[in-house]
Image 1 (cartoon, rainbow, N blue to C red):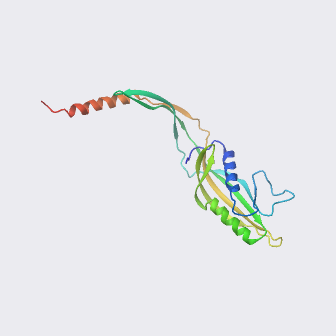
Image 2 (tube, helix red, strand yellow):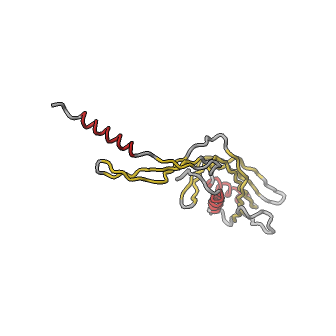
Image 3 (cartoon, one colour):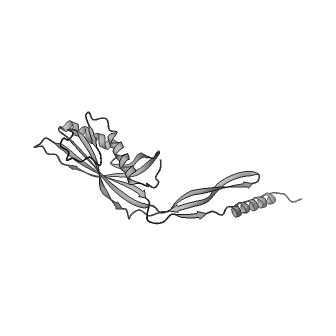
Length: 205
């Protein structure tokens, strides 16, 4: 699992749609994505539609530094070779809350209940949502902000809207910096310390 920086929000959109479209427990259920509006001439009778509701910068989360090794060096100590980082980058990701809406509709109460259970089993009310993105699995804190009932019984339509908040880290406007690690003096100091310990263990004659 990874809680790294998400370099493109579109990847999260695609992963959220794939997660929703993976629900297979409701017969005849159709799935509509971000570019599928509900104004089409013919709508599916049983469907889920996911949409993006915007974002906010989360001022409550502390902006932290992320260190990543960018180069390595090899060093010989006591006849043994060690590989350690010699350079690293420092970035300052931005904490952002993304808001998603999942709209469901059908024409009978039993199917409506089945879709409710399927959504809650797929997108937790609160916790962590794991989504595969670019070959890695990212962990996103998720929270169900509310469920709005839009039933229109005069038209025999059962409709609900689930509103979710997902916390992500995205690249910020602060530039990534490169830094080098001074390793040789540390190894030399370690070697001197080791020799002192060896001498102190030698009994006096």
